[in-house]
Image (cartoon, rainbow, N blue to C red; front, side):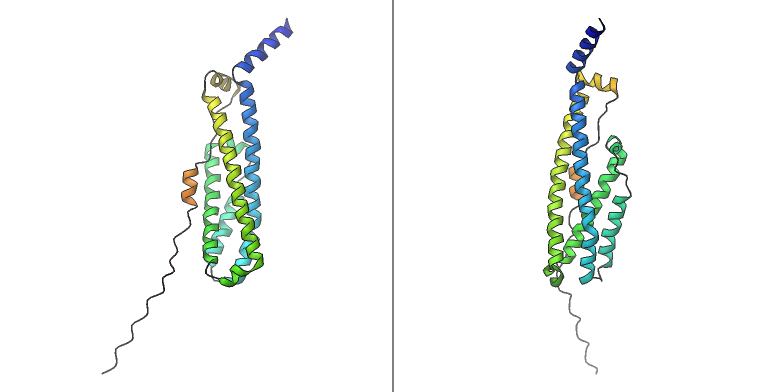
Length: 204
């Protein structure tokens, strides 16, 4: 009789979305780990990138400091697995990563003003690694977004929403792509030549 009840319970759970909740929740965890892995890869590149730029453009203190501070802010956020269950903490994490993206964009824009820096082999290698990492971040984020969307649909849909409430599954926060695109928009840079100072009038 006990075996029959267990089999019946298993059948009910599989038919009301329990297995789907388990599967999609694990997909989110795996996708989130990859997102963090790629963000960490970017963070590891930054010290060498900043030092290389400093060697040719030490006067760009504001830009260099901005990148360093943005990286430190990202590092101060504990990106634990629990973060993906806390909408407020997730939003702070996303904002910090967006600010770092923006700071890196300014750094690369500044590098355009220094031909010797652009021709430095180490800088070119770091820039290529950074560009590759940004592409990996985009792919990892897209996978995470899709995983969360699938999970959230299951949590909100009937009858799996009843199972979700019964076992404590709730909607998870997701990346707001539009907001981060705005945060990471490169600053406008003017290359207009400064206006010449008019010559002084001759003395009478």
